[in-house]
Image 1 (cartoon, rainbow, N blue to C red):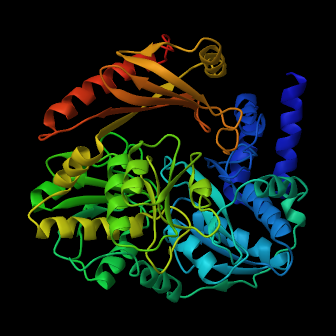
Image 2: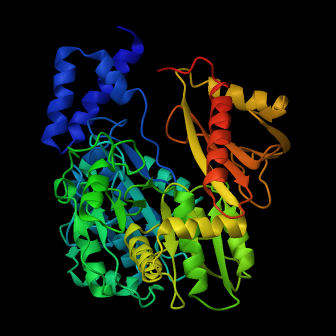
Length: 555
């Protein structure tokens, strides 16, 4: 046994002394009794790091897992960061241990002298984000792992206050300040705890739904939708929102309607994953629905599909929602925002409506802060199915909101239906007006993590002249910080040749992957079918060119 094994056993025994959870205590005791040094190394060889996305990881014992000790330490860090007397709203989804983690957070916060307000039941993330702003709270905590596998859970922190960013995810330096406070928290069995928390009533949900009804929804309501919450917490809240806004009740997908932390009908509870939307698409086609809608398990993202056609990309939905919102809001202070990896369509839509389009790094923590002085962001989106919408009375949520986006998409589809048209017709209209912007994404997983930074260095040292059939005309390197953006490890190639386009490369922040965001732009005059086929061919060539960067990609 090496010294590292001995130190991990000592760390495991120290962890046992403070762990209040019988389940993880039994797990850890079993590893110690069995002399399972590999299992201990997996749990104690590294730790989940707190960042702007909070914490996220597998459930289990030790600092490299999500558990009650980690959550209580995180809550102590938030309490120290927010300060005594701060009001903190706590929400949670229906995943394994979410309710326990929420209650533990409330006990630690109350014990530290904060006012802890707990949402009444498992609810969507946007309800938490809204409530932080609605109550003028100082901070918010959401216990969720969003669309991660069932064995995971997570912890997100939201900033409070009275500004336009209230109810948004934290940005630096808040993450570093909370992380430092977590490190200083000490053993959790020494933390002062209190049951002096307040559980909010259903009025918190009702106020959120009422705020959604102020979004630009038009007057059309005759649209039929099939909907799945993907075994998550969106179903009841979305049904209430549709009812209050005057829409027909969405047809449910019975097998996926009730919250289930095991997500039994999908491999990954992510609407973008192959097969995840199959039941909804089958149900939508059988019912003759106009549209199919899906939320991810915490309902902050929205997927949209057309029966008989398939899933729309996030960029397609973003383009449709942007034009709809800009056509139904007013004011010279309006602006919109998107990210460096999303399509180049939104700037063209914004220019046509006479408003500014800002470009940010990936993540809604940046998007919702994109408005400049005297500006009002009425729409923001990222290609990963996230949308934030506002009307002339402001934006209900300063984060991505899959429930509000579903309402506006239903209104958009209802207006098209009244004119005898579909979402596909609207997409063709935009292609003729702005050019066809076809997009795709490639994720290249590597066995050796060192390959990713090596590849990025090689690309910077020897810029490629072409990707497949498209020539590189210009390279934008975001590492030094470009156009006022914070530095990030990303490269964007502007392409030309038989088609125009862009290719953006960046390492994943959470997995051993290189992500490539592909875009091909073609003019459309008349029928869009042929340009779409040509664009699909170019995207396939770009995908092959990206994968060729890693010839030994693991299976």
